[in-house]
Image 1 (cartoon, rainbow, N blue to C red):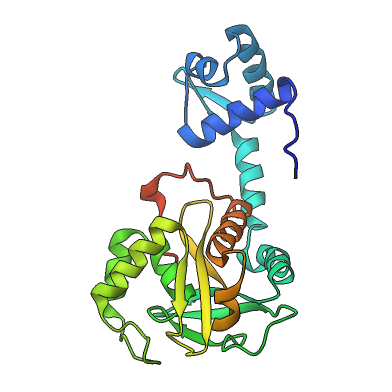
Image 2: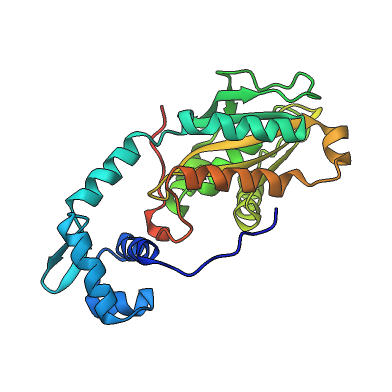
Length: 266
């Protein structure tokens, strides 16, 4: 697609920028808003006065903060942000584009539970039945979930995993698992090459909510021969899809790293 040319910014654009600045910073003076938005002080004054009148902003001790109307809007958005509701259309599109099986898994105990699956047009049966439980250490969704955890939670989880062998390729050594998870964090997706099902190759990526917590992981899976022969790499594709889903849940890559934490499993 050709990027749409961006026209001159109007008052609405500037007002949205002010709200975005305060969403990220928490509070800011008028001078700081002038610098962040890049317009005159008089223009910022007019905008914040309108936003204050509508209760989107409030002024306390010389600093602007989000007001009660913004809070009500945020709560309404959060109420409607549920990975189970938002994910299916996005994942169906991925399955349609690739022809392979696409799944959504959530954390439960020390496992991942598949809560959604879409079978692509060229998919054969793969071991990802809806409701099935999968080990964290031997699957792409599991390793993707581990990659999304904050370091202390990730290490605690890895330390208690049973590390059961499912095939000859299963990684049962914790240090090797740590290396695989570190690599998944670096590149944005995890890989599984016959570690749970000897004939399958899978790619997974974590999904984050508005606070930066990992709430799920998605995967794309298929027969190893076909996945290896594919012209388009599946890893970046599943990472892009997970990122799009995370954005729909309110996640921003500017979310402070310390906000990332373990999401309570079912």
